[in-house]
Amino acid sequence: MSINRNDIKGNYSEELITNICFKVAETGDFLAFVKEYMYDDDAIVVRNSLSALSKATDEELSQLNPIREELIDMAIQCNSSSIRRALLGIILRVDMNKENVRTDFLDHCLGKMADPDEVPSVQALCMKLAYKMCKFYPELLAELKRTLEAMEISYYTPAVKSVRNKILNNKL
Image 1 (cartoon, rainbow, N blue to C red):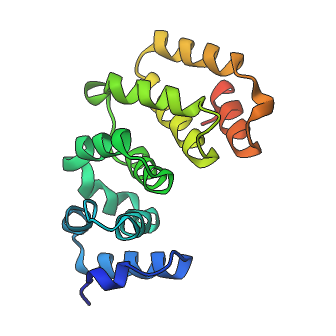
Image 2: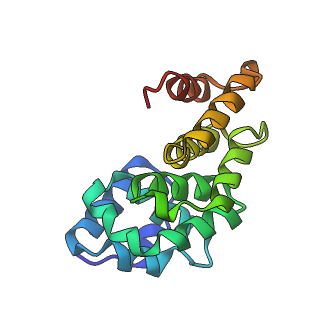
């Protein structure tokens, strides 16, 4: 079963997202799928195609390791919170090691996690990604924890508070 642009263009729903992922899994080529739709002119197509990958397994998402830098660039430049959320969710699940930590992306995550105007899901994902990157460097991890401790936590949602507490308690 192949995928076409019309399959992806529908209104966002769990059923649509699951069906898209199922169809991509049948082809077995997650990388080709992402390359075809992540730069589409229609933001709905981009959002739905990237959101569908939230249903993919880690093994399936490992196919995206070659475009990790492209995904990060897109997340940094993206103006849509829903597309940014989908990108950050993917980036969180692809390979990250000490050699490929990008300081511009770390700075982006640190800024977004504390931005009260950002949606909570993006704040939480940015916290997780900042933690994932800082774990490679003890001095950065200590600085991240000091930043999290200093945050005025009453401004954040329970989900963001939960991620913050897990990081501070080394349970993430």
